Image: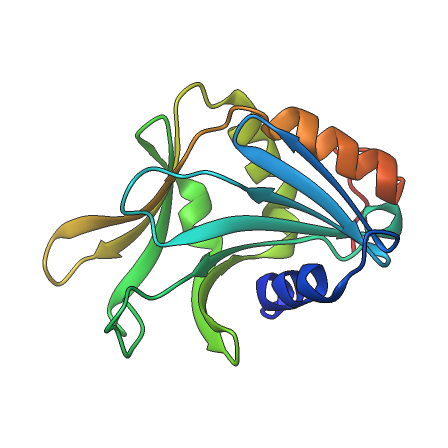
Length: 177
């Protein structure tokens, strides 16, 4: 769902205290807005240009994950070209999960999104990370990887658990959507 990060941000901005519940743990937060629960990075390494957002609907259906890229002042285009590919690393070890990611843009900006069926693998990988979760670009034409975002896994498990309570799903057993 490409618009998930944009819709999430807009929903939080418009939601009153009675309509939204929030929770923070370590470097991650959770929010329930309407019928959706979001788990999102609240802190990132210096020079990181976006946020990781996982979205779950009631009972865990239609779950999605995306990296919402926020351009630096003066940027006018996407940070990637046609020959660049998303990559993801856990504790500085590049993962095959990057092959399940794609770039996109919409009214809210630019992002990287993951095939929905890979969300359980992503959750497991973040859960097992000790130091970092890195969102990168593989620029094969230049033979380089560029780091776009580095996130700590600290607090992820508790934020995910809270979202599971609010939206009645088991993070260890997501339904096929």
